[in-house]
Image (cartoon, rainbow, N blue to C red; front, side):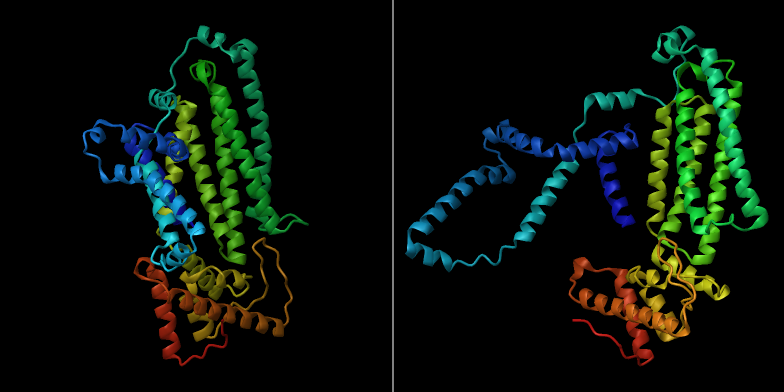
Length: 450
């Protein structure tokens, strides 16, 4: 689904940016979505205004105007057609002989829906206030005086020395707390190489990721609160800056700790999409912390963070699209298993990933007759069912082989019906590779489908 999501976001973005190149990522996407949502109101109005344009009155109406003008007469014609058909049996018999099978209703709805979407794509609309605010807001903070700060709501509620005091005290306590958390992680992961008693590694990983989410959001939110307005230019904010830098550094240590836990978890239980997603999230966390550091150091405003991080996240998504992650996951699990026979891999997960890894699994399981030993049936939640007997393992391996055969049969059946607009290179390549292996090894399919 990643390339589809990236494609839709790219189309939404290119429509907004083409209309206003000075617009930010977030505002461009917002105005594109606004154009599509408001299209139900503006499309009829634009058509009516187009019919009343001078070109139409001068007799130079284009085909679109003529089609629009013909809609109402055609609808009235259909109304009288059905009235006459219900009132005249002879006419009803004649009308029954008319064959409209050549008209494809799905094609009509598809074409009409495509026209409406393309109309919203090319006919961009903006909210002037939002557009001007975005264009007039730079990434730099505008220096303000102490008198201007006192006039703000925050300046009226608390004095500047008290604000600095609360910020420094808060960051000292939070740094101490996070230092304790990081110290515990370093002790167990770096020295003991084990989890605390009574805690599974799955809990250790998932709880660590959840705490990381809360910590990053809290860290950025507090920094955005304190480093706003006059406080960025206050000459006695050195301690607040230094403590913020230390807290950002400690959050990065927490990111590294979580990445290490995820790496150990993958080395024991194999790679999955969700475990790759943890790395993606950790990367974006580091980027967010780094841009927050730049915001404090260079006195950037809060809008700077949203602008830059949105572009970075979008760019990272585009870079990730060309990779066949199903095959990467499959190759990694199989190759890593060859060097570490103690891994507990969810083989059902691999067999159910899709068609892109089908040829690789077919080669490993069917042609070479190997398995991943099925020591455990690992669910996606990370729970294990250890202690399988030899017969259970053989039955499990037999089930995986049948799943691969079914994947091949269903793909062969469904893809055989496709026409050239639905051609898929990865499906064709995997089908041809499997068919070649079946022919070269004289294999018989042990399952059938209806």
